[in-house]
Image: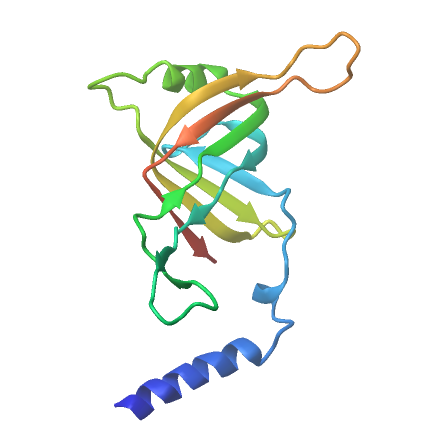
Length: 166
């Protein structure tokens, strides 16, 4: 049984290392993406930030092992970062209705899907956020000396995330 597991692990490693120039191993552009909130496309977003996931290590204080700390995962549940969506052009009525729907007993949680595309407009990966809701809305600074685009951003809190590589 152990040899079967070893053979399977070896074949998986060989398939990953067989062609390091495979298309799946190549970095992709980060400027081609779309965002769907609750199944609706809300508009054109200029930036998505804060997509992260972390596990806090647990340090075991072990007698006799004084040269380095001994770490194990799972000091507590893993945490996912707050995701910020920034935009210049968006269907204002939908976004504003969602922001103002936050309240006890109201169905304000939505699933958010961020699709990252290759340059050939083929989906590269899909990042999903479970039960997301807007925590903060913010408008950009207005400056009479500036020449930047006016943008708005919303910070989302979510219950979990997943990623599917296509």
